[in-house]
Length: 199
Image (cartoon, rainbow, N blue to C red):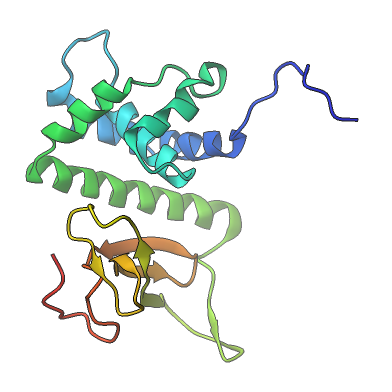
């Protein structure tokens, strides 16, 4: 039986686990320290929490700042979520130094997550190639087509006759996690990392 009168029912509950992971690995607090200079009022939204909420929103399928409404509409699950305008102000104030500090914070959180994994489940999983185990860390580097509208900055016609971007991505094959990405125009070549179409 399907009913619409349930209580305590939430959507996107799995996204809460991402926010919890950020808290447990120290990512939220490290983001807060890196962005402390952007906090306008002591009682206002914590910039580190805003950054985590934006990351959770993107991971959950959001495409624009306005998609924070998905989190904001479920206060019991996600707590207070910044307004679109507040999130926009935070992003517009980021500079190269702050971005470097955010990357450092993310790297520290990844170390903690790997250490927690080692404590509870053993070492990082060993990947297999052609059915044979491979020692060490294996990096999987590949490009993908991301289709978007023609008015997006740096979007161009792709080699597959679509329109958008052709980013180059690096994943850790052992765990499947994304490590890095390089945004490239859609016209970037499919078989090279040194392409003039890379912004």
